[in-house]
Image (cartoon, rainbow, N blue to C red):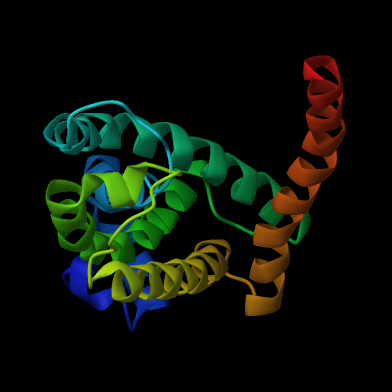
Length: 196
């Protein structure tokens, strides 16, 4: 079973395969490749004043670090919240299974790489006014679809790792988001008030 292919249509079976047969190092490899696409897609309207080739190189260098930090935090949240719903996954099992959610972002790498190298201003400059490359709309649509597919994979892999229903998996994924928003909203208002 190759997780880069099987994850798309068999996320639960692939998560079980990752848990039982693959190492955490292999999960990091999957995450690192996927995070390159995720990083490149996050460049939109960032206003970086760096040569496009260095942004591309930076995405390859930073991907493993961002992947490890992001997946470590997310795994801990899903592991702890899932335990409330009688989930049985260990932290390491959760880390390996939800690493699969980065797989869809791999398909974004060529699209954003081409965009970054051929029309960087239209990608990274938030005040850009000018011709937009023909691949602008298809890339944005693909990014949206990739994000939705990744969310579906997260829910399926959390359900498989914790050995509970999809409904409980949805709650396990949504509750940390709600808590983070509730905690961060007052902080954002406070900082905004200080700046003004």
